[in-house]
Amino acid sequence: MSDSSVLASIIEGVLEDLQKRLVPSVQLREQLDSAPKLRGAYAALNKDGMRLIAEVKRSSPSKGELSAILDPVALASSYQTGGADLISVLTEERRFKGKIADLIAVRAAVDIPVLRKDFIVTEFQVLESRILGSDLMLLIVAALAKSQLIDFYQLATELGMDVLVEVHDLVEAEVALDIGAKIIGVNSRNLKTLEVNDKNFELILPQLPTTVLKVAESGISTRSQVANVGALGANAVLVGETLVKAGNPVHTINELLNR
Image (tube, rainbow, N blue to C red; front, side):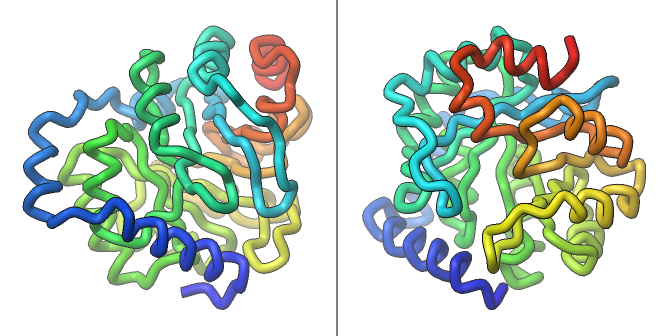
């Protein structure tokens, strides 16, 4: 577990909010039978050229409110029109003003895979993610003990989901590789200070094997940054703030990807 007070505080809130949704594990597993058919996030990202995960994100601990996003479906649909390969939907309520309802509505409206962007710290949330139709699920190395990482990764994989394993330094990258991660997200944001440092990309991306799909996360807002992380070995970028604040997301996506 990270000693980050920000991360610890977010996880504490996630666990509190989870109490409202808890149902017996047996009941939850029964719902797996009617879970939506998965769309294959790995296949969507494993293509030539830079891929884009476009994020529906209202707020963040570092920047506060980004956009009210009254119609997440319309935003996600514009992302798909613009050529995004995946839609990321924040479901963490307190710091990011996310909603599970957003994930359900967005997934029903688009044809491309969807990432559930949340702080997954319990088995319940892994099962819940599959039931909600998450094609890709986030696991943050800094937020979990290695034994939890292994358990949640294996369960998610057994349920058919792909997993984005997020790392912030080379030690965490080793852990991600050790548990067999096929998609690794390198986050340039320090979870202790919330500051973004592009040096993280330079430090970590080139060290990851070519057999792993690499996603550059946080602080990417320009075409030159996209080109830079591509040169460092990234297969995809995850972009939130820049797209939710863009007046024309379709144009911004084309600009970022130089289309």
